[in-house]
Image (cartoon, rainbow, N blue to C red; front, side, top):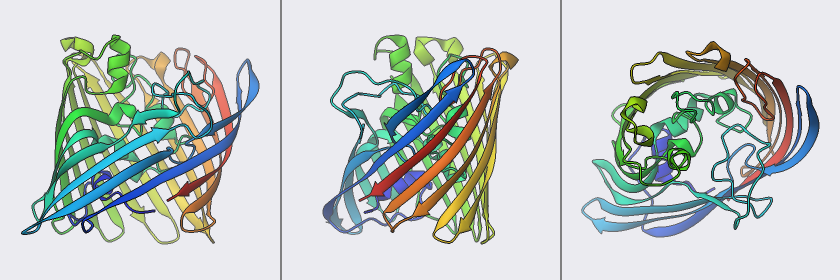
Length: 364
């Protein structure tokens, strides 16, 4: 797969500010899966879907050498539904059973921007994935659809019945945004960004319009040394749905340790709405290399200020590299909800649900 360097920079909070020579490249992901889903008091269903391991997408990237160490860079990236003609813009992360509506198969504009890069780092503007989008860096399931973190972050972390913005979903994609990405300083790097409303699609959808005057400031810090990587993310979103009382601050700290025979990954995140208690989500997991594949095990717990909205989720999965660009995967998830919580792959309030997924991902 031809690397989308600025996306990787935001994902990893930038390990280098070097970019490709002047060119335009095309890259993408095609991912499809079969799922068997069961839930308490629900009829079991079979499903064919897209984006089980990674969201299906196509992207154009380019760079032009402007001289004196300065380059113009751009990216245009679209997500799409690989298996039908539906649009899944409002589909929550961690849900495999949501139905799709009429559409052209394009689900959303993902990360798209134009900017300048050089020895100073990079400055970009457009629709940007905030640092919290890349929480998967500290997730043993790498933010796949069966990741406990992805499933639980779809809950009402910010108290407005909207998903957390520290999540691998549209909620972490900021509209009308500008960002600065630092170069690497002996393992340390940073991202600072600001966005004016509507900040994210979920807020606009819930508000019934795209006119809410939301705004956000975000910060991402990363430090990597040897086998250890540590990251911190802060998202400050104001005037959510046009209401000052919904001002939300979210924070996350995550870490990974690669011991060679296994990698341990985990994160802890909080969300506090103005003048309310703090909601919390933590997850931890391990990745164990086995031949050409990896065994992944992860557990997550969502603790809400309202105990009836609590949930917990566990996943075990196996990924197998058929080549450098093609990966087969299989996984099993079980999510348990308290009485008012409805999270998971096949969820109803207060129920437990289970899902088995088998799929294939190809990158190009």
